[in-house]
Picture (cartoon, rainbow, N blue to C red):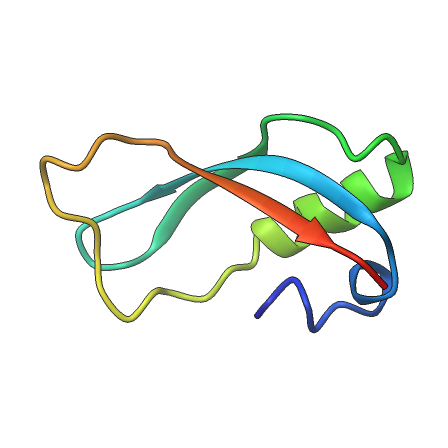
Length: 76
């Protein structure tokens, strides 16, 4: 949802892998691109969005393997 709200990212076609670390309180403590979209401008926009993710409704269980690996796919 946060990624989709960004104008640059909402109107682009890309697929990227992201690593996210979430603490027990739901705060995203770290997020990084695990791969590139192939476009430095999109990569930069994704990094900005990932570094400003709001807390999640639920935190990660203490024994949950980290990072959480996500694939984000967007088609305009």
